[in-house]
Amino acid sequence: MNIVLLGPPGAGKGTQAKRLEELRGLKQLSTGDMLRAAVAAGTSLGLQAKQVMESGQLVRDDLMVAMIAERIAQPDCAKGFVLDGFPRTVQQAEALDAMLAEQGRGQIDRVIELAVDEPALIQRIAGRYVCASCGEGYHDLFRQPKVRGVCDRCGGKEFLRRPDDKAEAVAVRLEAYRRQTAPILPYYQSRGLLRRVDGMASPAEVAKEIDRVLDGA
Ligand code: AP5
Image 1: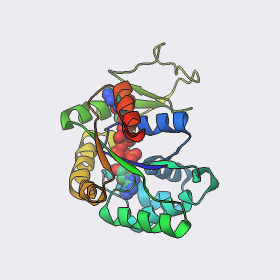
Image 2 (image 1 turned 60 degrees about the vertical axis):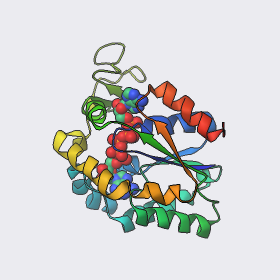
Image 3 (image 1 turned 180 degrees about the vertical axis):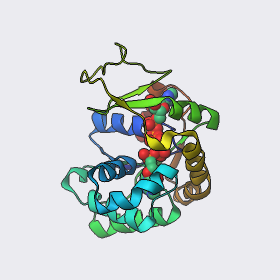
Image 4 (image 1 turned 45 degrees about the horizontal axis):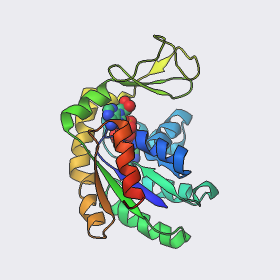
């Protein structure tokens, strides 16, 4: 099964995609994580993406399409995947359909939109941080480590905040979602693939609703 999670920054795409990978064995493909890894490794893609990402704008379609086409062709995607952060433009959505057909990787089976309120998003994004060693996610208000300043998972003591989680960049990211990504919704709606889930519920409730959608209830 191949799934797309859609929703504005902070809607919970990464949170739910990780769970779908753990529980259903669908490979999580987060284009944001891939780009951040490319930036950290200083690859040519990373160098091209760094400033664009920090400003909150979208990286060029041709770069993103090439990156995801290469990733989907890997054997660990054969059983299915969850796209988290791709497609983000109608052009990317069209390219995705074409690459799946070309690679004989089936089609997109379900698109889930996580619907959320903007003020909640800003609070979610502004408070989040991750362990610098293992990447475990935390939040100033919703999820602190059990021992202050020590990662629950690996014992690490350094934490990072994303440069694009600053208020100015978040405003640009939300605008990019409204202007460039939201027009994908009718693209999938017209194909009968789109389902809307209330992303304002707790992570566990959102997960339950996604399960209901995927299990066809
Ligand atoms: P990306 O990394 O994809 O960022 P994003 O879409 O802005 O999404 P986030 O990671 O901020 O949020 P999320 O929806 O995954 O929410 P999360 O689960 O973390 O992209 C970054 C940049 O890369 C883009 O701006 C662009 O420059 C570039 N890029 C990436 N893909 C691209 C593409 N295809 N084309 C062009 N450019 C691209 O949750 C957020 C917080 O809320 C967490 O703290 C979490 O614990 C908490 N939370 C989650 N769910 C709930 C809940 N139900 N209730 C309460 N809190 C919750």
